[in-house]
Image (cartoon, rainbow, N blue to C red):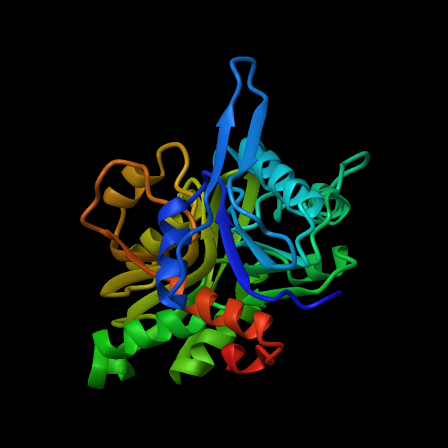
Length: 317
């Protein structure tokens, strides 16, 4: 893996404002490229500037429409490889297919592994992402993977928001699978942790069973990596108030997918406010309950460190 002579940042169509924000934080302009679609749906990519000998960073979340954005990414990687880029880093702030990381029943695919193979086969040299749904996906790649954390962004936000009243706040894990990341967030904030024990009847639907921990009279922060249909989140929030006796419910997640009736559910729930990062552009109806923090400065710093061959470990602290 050779080191490029300079940084080139290019973007697909999934989140151009985010890519432009990353460029501004580094002090670069976004690469001159075109990603379009033929009438039959085929994707066409053109690079209008040289990337020969450069460290190329392709910024592309695989969010809705997932397959189109994934294909754009793969073709951009192939184009840069054939244009003699020195090193290609796929910067995918949100990694789609991450929930399909294992076989749940007989004859299930492991789609996250397939996507990892596709990215590697296309010619990528490394991957930079944020808060993978399952940590083991890093092992699906045969190339380096840097998995950034949004935890510092949320920690700074809530420390400023609650200030001296932190003693009245409890962090809540929305399910048993999220306990590890929720505990890390709670420890960083110096707060206690509660857990929602739920039973999922089928995909995108969940029934809250009981609450492990004391949230009576407390403000709570539900911490998760993503919110898709918001069914689980809203069920947990309602249970916190009606069953647990919480006074206020806040929520934060790295990735706001917000598909289907997610925004409507959030508006009609007990949630006071939910915070996402801008890894996925917000395209839904407006909501006074939904706010965004930018992760662009964090990715910009990571990109500079990768180019300069400086460790990224300090970004995880």
